[in-house]
Each structure stands twice: as structure tokens, then as C-alpha cells.
Image (cartoon, rainbow over all chains, first blue to last red):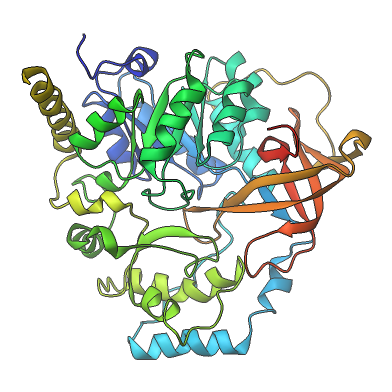
Amino acid sequence: MSGPLHTPLCEKLGIEYPIVAFTHCKDVVVAVINSGGFAVLGEALHSPDQIAADIKWIRDRISGKAFGIDLVLPASVPEDRTVQQLLAQIPQSHRDFEQMIKHKYSVPDPKEAPNLHIWGGLDQKRALAQVEVVFDERVPVFASGLGSPEFLLKRAHQLGMQVWGLVGKPRQARKQIAAGTDVIIAQGYDAAGHTGNIGTFSIVPQVVDAARGTGVPVLAAGGVTTGRHLAAALALGADGVWTGSVWLTSRESDVNLPLKERLLEAETDDTVYSDCISGYTMRTIRCPWHDEWLGPAAPEVLKPPLQMLLSANYIQGSLDYQRKDLMTEAAGQGIHYVTEMKPARQILSDLVEGALDVFDRFAAA
Amino acid sequence: MSSTASPRPEGPAPAAPYRVGFDASMRGRRAECDGGQAIEGTRLAGRQNFAGTLTGDFRDFGDYPWRWYLMTDLTRKPSGSTHAAVWCDSGSLVLEGDE
């Protein structure tokens, strides 16, 4: 196969289209891979046993094709951190503010107390247990959503696995390329979740320049939701795109229906880059929690994990009772173009067709 | 849990979750850390940037090893952070003068 969309990434992965879906939903992974793209399943929250089960489930449905698993390895951990000590540090003024929001917006209590200790990134030991499963299962692609994967490159390569690293700064890209990372994901400020502060149009060509001559493919991430974005990413020198928000509202996605509706209605400026949910800056869909914490009466946002402990009941309550007016989710600025609930196969096809239209237009000019 | 066994690095598995050590060449080095971690209770992650001075103390996790250095005298840390020190993944460190 040839054409403007057939990049070295396609050769490296054995795929038709240079489109990578990042998702937390196994069904989306399978649908995208079986439609000619590539998909990476985010497993940061899961136990080693859950990760192993998910890998088997996917393998049973993709006929030997490649796929990826993404983990969030910690990159920094405060000294002498104990959650219990930190919990005792939540000021009464902040608890009062949280209660004010609860009453003002009639936020329901969660059906069960949010479990704040079930994820894999709190300490190195738990993260390593997740990594071991990915090694044991020889998952074709291990993607690191945050921390440096340098320490595990040698073993991954011995097992025939690729290691991908997501970066928000050119210097992170240079380090990871030098260490032997197989694919670099250059994530711009437009992206959902934990973005850096450099825009997609600025960081992608810088990372492409850093990778020039190394043979390391670069994926553009952050705001990619249309074929025009895909064409632009390729024009910037990227070998493909890393996409996330566009899959949240797919038919296969396990995001609950009211939240899908909220996402379909959202505009670009409904996404907010703020630390008020967790104490970490991240891009999420604006909700009443943001409105209040970004207002003049709000106290100073607390450090992690205290702020997350404050927001946890609000978030869980909104999900448990499907309160669309309260819900939030990580979403990038490209959400403006996510306006229909479509099958993943159709989303992939639309991305491809949209990009080809751009190249056809240029060729005809 | 797994269907296939993967080759392990040579040497015995550590009894402790990590091994402690000291690298004199890193002591007193100024550095920045492109840090962060997963956010408790969510499936998301957050980045946090620190700058400070390395003490030379390190911890090695796992058999690879995965090395972490202790950074103190923090001159940059996230707003709201009251910690005086932070452990940094060695791969996420940028040493002053090395860029």
C-alpha cells in the first residue's frame, strides 16, 4: 500500500492508517485495530490481574494483530508522603467550600465511597507489578503516559517489544530518543488530561526535528479529531497521530450516555486547563466544580492528593446518578469537532477520508 | 496470571522493595525534574515540575534497576506543595549543564 497516509509508522506496526487510538475501553481498541488503525489501552487504574485479563480479551478478538498497553509510571514522588497524614491537613475552609458546592448544585452522595487507593501509580512497587504483566504477556507496544521508560527499554527490546514515550517538552523527547525509545508521542497543550504547556503546532515540529535521522517515528497528540488535523500533523513532519477524545463518544465506548451527550455538546472553550480537580493541572470538561473553584470566592487549590479527596465525592456522585449537568471528563480542545455518536470504524474512516481530501486538494492546485 | 514467562535480568531478586545507595558524583548537582504521577482515584495523570539540588542518595527499585534520586532545597515546586524534598525518576531528571 502507498499514498500520503502510508508512513513509516504503518510499516513499523503493520497497520493501514497512521492513526493511534488511546482509550480506556477494550471494545474501542478492538474496533480500531480491526478497522486498520492502531490502539493503546490505558490501564493505569488496573491491577496486574485485570491487565492480564484485558490483554487476553483483546488478543482473542484481533487475530494476531498488534496492540498496546499504556501505564502511568510515576516520575516524582514526594518524600515521606503518607496519605493519612495528608488527609488530616485538609483545612476546614476547604471542606466548607466543598459542602457549599454540594448544596448549591444538589450534588448527590456517591452510592459507595470512592476508592482512592485502587490505582497503580502511587508507588514504584505497584507500578513495577503492572509492568511485569506487560512483559510477561509480551504486549507488542508498551506506552508510558508520563514517566520515563528508559529503565525498562533493554528488557522490552530483548522481548521484542516496542516502548513508546509521551512527552510534553522537546528536552524530554531528546532524552527518550537517546535512550532508545521506539516511538515518541509529542503531546501539545490542546490535549486532554496532563498536557504540557506547549501548543501542538509548536511542539510537534520540534520533536520531529529532534528525531530526524534517528528513524524514531513521532506521533502528534493534542486536539486531533478530524482528517484535517491528521493531514496537518503529517505536514508538520509527524508519522501519525495519537488520538483520545474522538473515541470517547464512539458507539463502542463505555463512557456512560449522559456524559457522551455532554461531550458531544461541548465546545473548545468548555475544556479547562486547571488544577482544581486533583491539584495537578489537567484539561477537563468544565462543570460546576470548575465554575466555583475558578471563581473569586474559592480558596487556594490544595496539593495532591488532598484536592482529589475533596472532589472525589462530587465526581462519583455525578457519575452514580448520571447527572449530566455535573459531569466532567478529560477532553482535548478538538472536542468541538466531536458532534456525533458513531461507530469507531466510521470515526477512523472519516479521519482517513478527511485527510485524503486535503491531500487531493493540494495535488489538484 | 501470565501465559508466557519472560527472561529475567541476572542476579537474585531483592528482598526489600528497593535498595538504597549513594552516588557522590550526583551530590550537590542542580537539576530539574519533569515529574508527576497518576492521580489517585482517577485514570488520569498529572505532571509536576521541580527544581532543586540532588543529595546523591538514591533508591533502586526492581531488577532493572529503576533508579530514583532525592532532590532537596527545592527552588521550584507545584503551588500548594509543602514538601521539602522529592524523589525523582532518574530518567525524568535534567542535570544543570547537561542540556
